[in-house]
Every structure is written in structure tokens, then in C-alpha cells.
Image 1 (cartoon, rainbow, N blue to C red):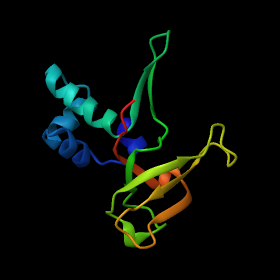
Image 2 (image 1 turned 90 degrees about the horizontal axis):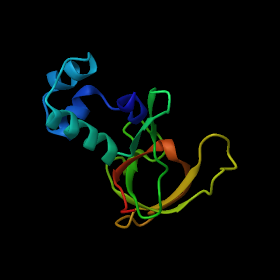
Image 3 (image 1 turned 180 degrees about the vertical axis):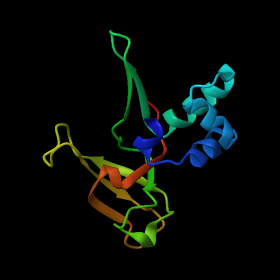
Image 4 (image 1 turned 60 degrees about the horizontal axis):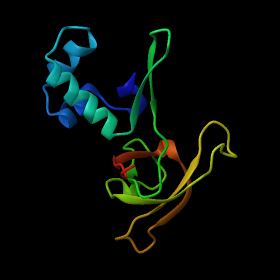
Length: 136
């Protein structure tokens, strides 16, 4: 579920967690892995903004954390908003307050510091992926 929330392939998780692709597959098919390997995958997912949740009844789930001012982001590969900025990293400078006025998702404003027309206003958060979270 966490990979799906981020739009990652198993190869992408393997790359970011510094494990083999077969390791990700074994984990997802409930094979046993050493705790350090599981921790590496969990860290990679959390660094990308995933929050793991467990309810009182023992059920579990995942969700993406809201982007925050100061986070470093880039457009997701599948985004068509600004293909010319596909791999450039931007800084979140404003986040629509909660609850958003646009329904279940919210808008963010970002600044691409090395671009002449580098400020992008009010694009929905799902168009971006978290590159580096701001502390806190």
C-alpha cells in the first residue's frame, strides 16, 4: 500500500532502500526478512512521506503526510503540469490550509530557485513527490 501511495515500482523501492528487487518481492509476499532490511525499506518509505498507522483493533494502514513549507519536492514522473521541470527540485513555500477548499486534496506553491520562471502557484499536492522532508 505504501508503494502504491507513492506511485513507486518495486524496483524504485529497492533502489531507494538499497536492497535487491527480489528482496522487495519477498517482503511483499510475506516472506521473512532480517529486521535491518525491513527497517531500510520502512525508512525509505517514511523519507518519502509515508506514515504507518496502527489502530487500536490491530489493523494497520498507510497514508502520505501533508507537504510542509520548506520540504523539497519535484514533479512526479507521470505529471504533465510542467514537463520542462520534470527532474528539477523545488522548495515548498506555501501549503493550502486544512481543510482545503478544493475537496479531499490540497494545493501547494513551490519555488524552483534555478529557473527564471521558477514559482509555481497552486498545483495539487499529488503532482509532486517528496524529495527531502523539512525537519519537524
